Length: 309
Image (tube, rainbow, N blue to C red; front, side, top):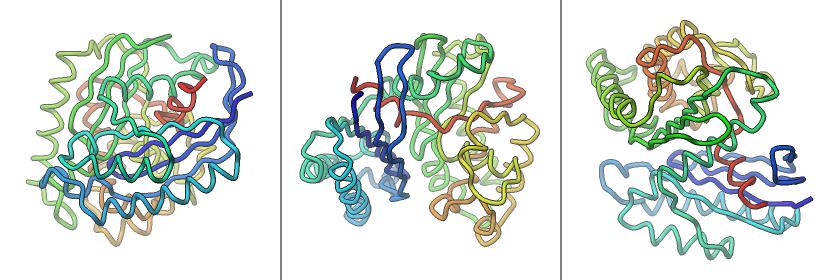
């Protein structure tokens, strides 16, 4: 058994998984010791300025210092820090790298979109065989700055990362409270253009099961399931239909911030960006003709953990 720590630093959140891994092949098991998430909005303003702001960096480093204490307390023998879209796009990413090295003593890996996609696919699909949904799978990881599309069965066949994410689309288009019809139309057009780019590079029509990852997808699932509070056990591996996703998306885009804040499953850090995240999922299902999405709580974070054995 190996105890490892995985940190995923995205555009909207920074997350920690400390896990015990037994074996490394298909028969291996991963058992959570600690799983944490903090909304830090590292990518705030990056689409406009091209830089990570001092305030965003400090929010991120504060969360990471708490994670470093947990890693030491639990005795993880290996730590891997992966950073994704916002850090890839930032001109001052060296400021981020220096802070991470100071906190964790390891160099963060600012991974490519392809590497991010592969890690997400591993984390999301290792347990799907037990449920026997038909493959190939299209794994979709909707982040804050980018969305990864990965097609595969036992392994990745094709992947692409495109710059549509819940933070980026909110900052670029959905600025109203609630967003105006023109803003929603512009956001949908931006998303659809990216989906055309994906279809040209990834044979999405070959996929038989859509697997959705990350906070936008799990929050939409929690709303569709009408949960009284966020319940990862109920959400993980749930199947949400396209009409359910469409209805939730419509309601979120027509709701005010105050109304969204009262939704029982809503994390405070997602209130401002959940409409864009839901719209991305809805457009994917419409454009690629999926009747349902299998929702996974396991994603790139689990893939980062598995990569250490």
